[in-house]
Image (tube, rainbow, N blue to C red; front, side, top):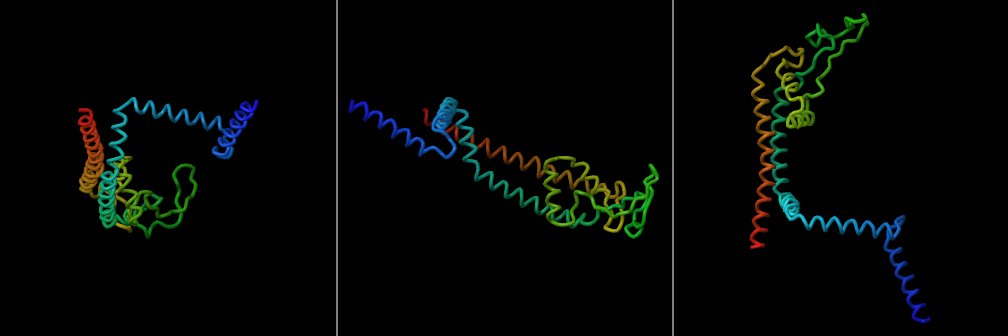
Length: 212
């Protein structure tokens, strides 16, 4: 009987310790189930050595990736400042397409549909280069190649801050945009891929030497 009482008291103390170790609002049973799931995940992870190599190569390549990110950001910032000097304030246009000069963009005009009179306004392009921050955002969007031709054509049509854009005003700017996209998007992305592949090959070589 004394042994049975001692065993019961020991079981109660174990349950009390589990309740104390469990976070508030989490039952010991649910906590143990989570622990079991984590153990199963680790067991599956250990069964796949190639997956371990991929994860380890990603971890070891973090310093190199950080360096490439810094270089890419520095390159993008330089180009953003250059584009600000070239196209800053030049992407404005009047809401009335018939008015191409800022001083004439006043009063009201008819929209040509239902004859409703609208107020003229001198509006800027949503993706512009009027300041460094806006220019940097536009340059980063160019790196994603998302509507890059629309951004490029807006700059090609740009004239000066007091006149509306004119179609194909400076077609030579297309080479500048394409050069930036090639260097920034493809070259930098290849650097990212190259760093990760190199880290993976090094990790695989070390693993092969260890097995050998």
